Length: 391
Image 1 (cartoon, one colour):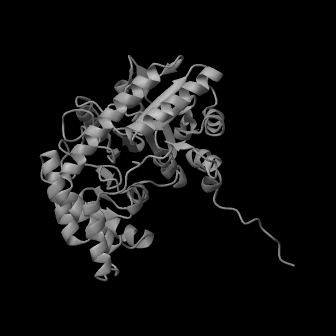
Image 2 (tube, helix red, strand yellow):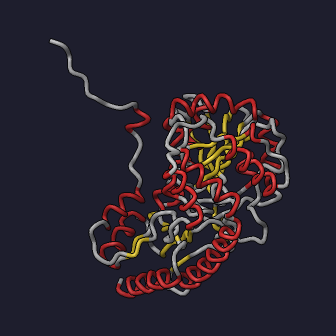
Image 3 (spheres, one colour):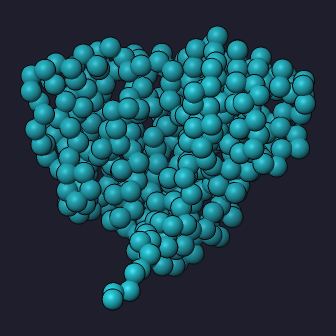
């Protein structure tokens, strides 16, 4: 008689926890009148000009496989867009189109990270960024942001000290989800120089780069400073700046020498992105700049509205985000953000993301996605105020 073995996944997979954001959202499913601010997306659909362009491609039968690295015309359009945005030539040979921004992160990590590798991650951060290297067997060392003088701050010296010669990759998300922290212009060169010195790969999650509250068109990026052969991979997505979260389309900028390997990994992960979705992306890049400008203005107004409302409440600390679409705040005395977030759903009809979803450094905090209509944000603030008064 053969011995029965338990059907268990690898230890790294068994140690993963389901998304706490999704856990809170599931607690609210089916409940009447819950205002949801838990997911990182706008409450408005993708602009019509993008939807219409993709719909025409679908109607025309554009349903076949495409190139692993993305359609040549999309890569050329993307190269022109990035070169203009960052003021430096970025050739199509350095680009890979992926089926979502998170797929770009995973495929880049698959190319760079081996079991046992040491990687550093700036936290708190969207859980996928920290968990992807853990799935691949890496040892993750967090470097936490801290709230100082009403803003989130990175201790550059502590980060540099963490990046020892045996570090394989630094994962850095700026503007940051959930805090809105944005890498300072003057810190870029020091980080890049240190990574060059020790041969450390820099994996920059730039998905929120256009959603900056500064006058510049983009948040500070490593791309204008880096040599094309530097150990830098910039991952990005069409999800946020063009309201295309459900389309699942992203990209990577990498050294040309790495792109061939990325294409092979794409073949074994998703093969390619859908043709008609890529057609929508071409429209976003060529016609979407007025939309991005308007979205940035809307998010700036929403940030001001939500922060003012939060700061008017007793016992609330709400540092100012410099980019993104989130307010990351905490209530005095909160030590269990998951329990609090669930209580807000059931008792106040208010859906927020628990800070614990973004790592231990986020415990005690809550994330509010303010990419919503003003009246919805205002109603959410009223519900939070009533909840706090009743405590």
